[in-house]
Amino acid sequence: MGLDTNDLITLARPVLNCLSPEIPYSLAGERLVIGTGLTESNLSQLFQVGGGPAVGLWQMEPATHDWLWVWLMNGTHDSLRRKVQALMAPLPSRINQLAGNLHYAIAMCRIRYYVSPEPLPCGDDWDGLASYWVRVYNAGGAGTTARFLEATACLRS
Image (cartoon, rainbow, N blue to C red; front, top):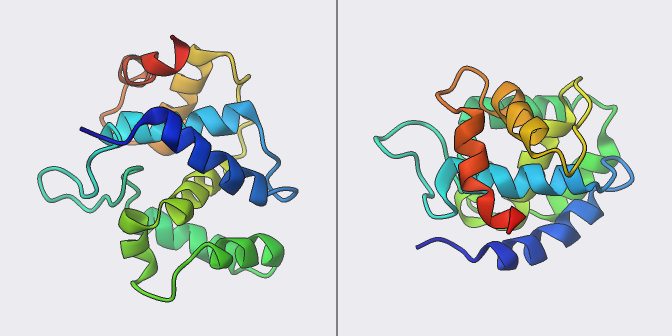
């Protein structure tokens, strides 16, 4: 059994708001973050089934995580980087914090969507959100829009 979805939404909103104004809060951003957790791990798997590299409820791969840190460190995102660092614990490593630090993992998931040049779909466009997840977050993976829509049905009821 995974985390309660409403609890995760309650936890995620202040994190998503703290990333503003660099990453403005939006319903689409919130639904993508929550939907990604539901789709990737059913809010229950901290490590990829079968021993793959993905870590945390959002199943972020270390290579993606490290690429985002290169982006954060390039000198043009200092304010956002400081906000993300404030969410971190001194230990363990950043990769391991994807599994054990929900605030940090939420922020990194949202940043993954933010760096995409594609604009976010409307927050009420579930088909658009599903397609966006496939193209941006699950690119090259086995995910489908049907999988995202099935996993996020609880958000529409």
